[in-house]
Amino acid sequence: LFAPTFQAWGWLQDPTQSLSNPIHEPPSWNHWFGTSRQGYDVFSRTWFGSQAALKVVVLATTLSLIIGVPLGLISGYLGGKLDRVLLFLMDTIYTLPGLLLSVTLAFVVGRGVFNAAIALSISYVPQYYRVVRNHTTSVKTELFIEAAQALGASPGRILSRYLFLNVIQSVPVLFTLNAADAILILGGLGFLGLGLPEQTPEWGHDLRQALDALPTGIWWTALFPGLAMTLMVVGLSLVGEGLSELINPRFRQKH
Image (cartoon, rainbow, N blue to C red; front, side):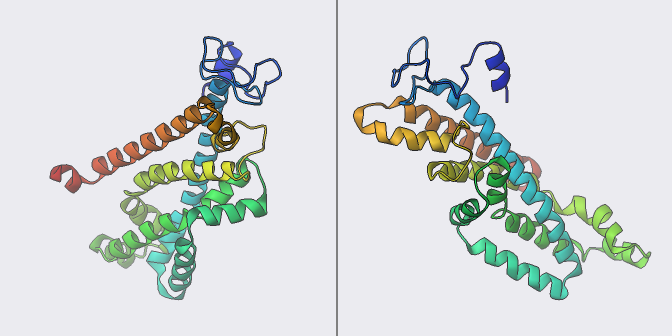
């Protein structure tokens, strides 16, 4: 997030600047993570790669949340034919491997931040839908919902005021875990050349470029982007576990 500020202060090179740097220089005082075969500063590319990854992942998970949560609420509360159709559609999407679905969509919509977010978000919508729908079907039989219905509350009011806050406890946990998974899938898209535009710093693309040089002993171009991706995935997973423990009192008492 602070990469452009650090660049403005002179702490980071332009991640697209290559002509002024030596190629395949090992880590040194001038280039902390070394340089790539194109002459890119690996430290700068790694920093800016985290910014690009966060942009895509936050956008993708937010899109899937915005679509999946309302659909789950409506489907679980109204039931009937609409519920069966939505459940069939979401189960169909859910059975498809996330990476395969994202690769197919990325091939169709093309490269770019928003396009990559769309390709990632489709595979996460069913997860939000299923979690919220299942909670809604159980909560809608509670006495306070029946009391609201008896008092003449409209379905929209019941969904927004009485059901919404009672069925989204697991959504923050799912959001962080999906974000961690999206980091890996975005890396896979970049590795296949289907992620962000070529000039945009991206961990998956940089790992693909580093693969050719790895047998010759050029290890730093693969190590640091891969390590950054691993740390971000582990960090988001730990946040998700922490939220799960915080939100679920029974889990907290058990441990």
